[in-house]
Length: 137
Image (cartoon, rainbow, N blue to C red):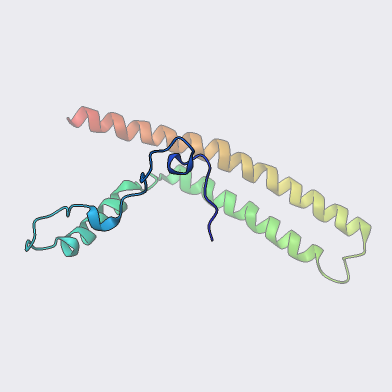
């Protein structure tokens, strides 16, 4: 059984007798009796609203070029991590240090590109598009 919350007014000592939650049967319907339901037409409309609610991120050739560099660094990180788990290199301390150095040397530039370079270019592009829309109006 669910535990009753002492903070709920209907379970406190000073509550009026008979002050309970109203049943669902006492609620009034939202539409007139006999009118057609609109649930079928509302579903596609809501799906279209959800699609337009999340705008696509703008891109440009420069952003795409930086994204390719980011993917290359990411591939280097994945390949280095995979090679470091080879059984022949797993216990070699020198190989592990070199692998960690390569992984670190690829990770930090990738994060800088993602969090600084691409974000700055994308924000500039969004500002340009907004100013062009204002000029058209």
